[in-house]
Amino acid sequence: MSNDFDPNDTMPDFAKVGQPVPAFTLEAFDPAEGGFTEVDLGALRKEGKWAILFFYPADFTFVCPTELADLAGRHEDLKKLGAEVISVSTDTKYSHMAWKSDERMLENVKFKMAADPTGEVSRFFDVWDFETGLALRGTFVINPEGVLVSSEINFYNVGRNADELVRKVEANTYLIDHPAEVCPAKWTPGDKTLTPNDGMVGKVYEALND
Image (spheres, rainbow, N blue to C red):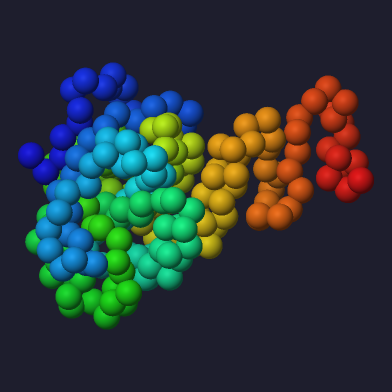
C-alpha cells in the first residue's frame, strides 16, 4: 500500500488540533537522494522530530510550484528546528519524480515528496476535495509526541507563506520547553511571551509593555 495507518493506533475520524495523530506511512520521491523512499510518521516520532505535512493540489500545476519553491527556501531553517518537511499530493511518486525533473522552480527542493493517490491521508486531514479528487492547500505541524499543534487550510487559488510557517514552528518549539508560557501575535524568538495568571486578566497591555 502507498499509505497505511498503523492499526495499533486509535483512529479518529479526522485529525484534530491538540489530539494525537496516528502513525502512518506514505510512499515518496526523495529529491535529495534521487530515488524512491517511504515517509514513516511513527519513525519520525521515535526520532523525536517535528513533522510538517504540506498538502498541495497537484503536480504540473501553477500555484503549487511557487509554494514548494518558497518552502524550499526555508527548508534548512525548519531542519534546524528539528522538523522533517514532507510535501503531499494525490499524485504518484512517479509523477513527483517527473515534475521535479521538469519544473525549474523546484530545483532547490530537497524535502521528500509523498504520494497519497488513494486520498486516505488527505481525507484524514480533511483536505480531500471529493469533487476533484485533489487535496486543498493544507499545512499541518505535528510535535515530537505525535500531537497536531497547528492546522491551516487554503483553497486552490491562494498560496501560502513559508516565513509564517517557520514563525509558527519557532513558537511551538519554544513552547514545548516552556509549557507555562504563551506566545502573543507576531511573536518571534527573543520577543516577550506571556505567562497567564489571574492578575493579567484585563492587563495584557501592561504585561507586554512593562
